[in-house]
Image (tube, rainbow, N blue to C red; front, top):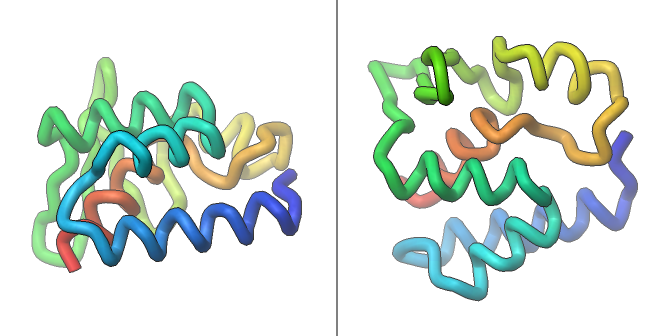
Length: 107
């Protein structure tokens, strides 16, 4: 379950991503500070070009398979078991975070 402080920090980071031309070291550190290992993996996925858009659908290549991400919802086990149930202290799996980062950078 995420806190109001988490949501405010996420909003600030997403606004920074949208206003930047790419991910700089400071922005990457902020993402990792907020999302932990999921943030680090999301950055790696974005940098390695494993996020793609097909018409209006988004896909993220994970370690073993490709996942479709709709908004901030993903079909992966982490999302289903930890994010959707509120067990995690973040609001997205790394696939959904990578998709959102890529989408904001493309705006």
